[in-house]
Image (cartoon, rainbow over all chains, first blue to last red; front, side, top):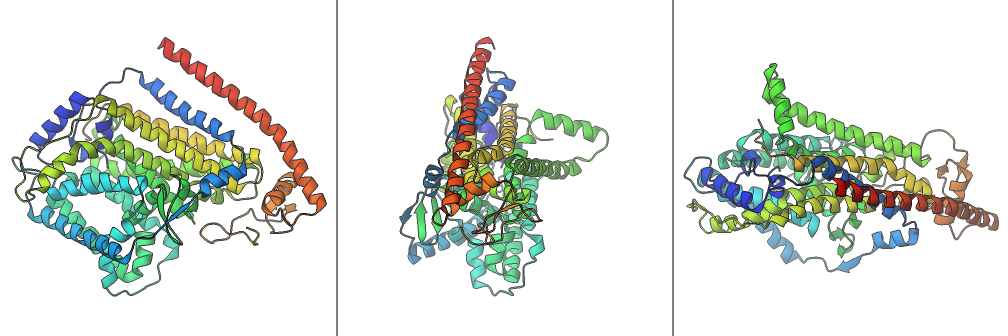
Length: 462
Length: 94
């Protein structure tokens, strides 16, 4: 999940050269730290000013939103819906079939197709498909349009034909298994060649398939995909940001982000999952900064093994993000003067963070997706004998501002969602405004962190 | 939303601080920290059921809050203007 962050901050010429060079040198389109290293443009504005401006933009948007105190208006904006016909059974069956075929095809090409980890072999379509089409492109569709993963998910379709033991799911575990698996997948992505070697990727997909189907058989498909499967939870959460969403009557159109106030976050483990989703996008960029390289060099110099450093940083950063968020919930309770518990406030405000996570994802992946889409098309015509030179779309220099804009837009959406939530929770208007202060401070911190990472030169993670 | 005890989106009861509350809504049992907030809650959540006295209390609390809101808006606008010109000057210097 790293890649495109760098695509963002790099100039036109550098992007073309770097991508072309990376493709020629390592035929696989890589994920990880191999694309566009050190190819970032230097900004003419000093970093501290970019960070302060970003933080101030978030703060100023909060001040503007706080002027809106009309409950009726806030409720009508959030509650606006336009009902649409639900997709028919034939359409859903076709989508399911496409999902299973896509999984089978990806596995076959990854395991049997050209091994693009070796030189002089063209890109492997399976690898391109997973990273460019699915993780970049499809994920964007889940928060920009609507999540179709429930129907498309090939593992859910396969689990439906398997028997189930319907063991009771341990409620105490909450959704921590999904959070753990999400962090583990990101760790794997950063430290293993899963982004360069189609064989390794194929192995990971096989392992994921075994774990997922076993879980679905033991605990029942619905429980497993709702509670323990990280991929389904990510897409379901992103789907709540999108303008199209499922509801009781079928499908409805709503304003972007309005679905977030319908997302139930019922315990601390679910808050943890939301924060983890936000943290993993940040972590991915963080390990490619010179700051991380310096820390890693220093620590490995005194004998700390690198292999231990990554999981510690991943878990430590997650703990820090979660701690900051829970601290904000407690502060919100004190400022709002309410009998509601801090834990309850934390659960209610958590969905607003998903708009920020979606903004990060768009900033990281849009340029990556657009520039590599022609490569996918070229390789798709000959998956087993791909051309060694593939076309890459050259994006104009101004495109890097789209990434910055995506991060800011995500935050603006989050501010509005938090504002709506506060007015649902509190009878007092001033009380609702005060309750948001700590969460806005946290959002300013998140914005400045991600802008800082964007402004860093790109290095290959040690 | 007039059920007691109130439930959140996931259908679980809303969590309140333990212990008796000095200001509790007679219609739904939700606890509040002050009489003003309780009056506002009654006006927003149970507008059909209010007695004349409760309605008057709501209007009074709402008006009292409007004054504080006006002051907050003034501060917010002042802060926005300061931010705007502050950044204008910083960008001119840097």
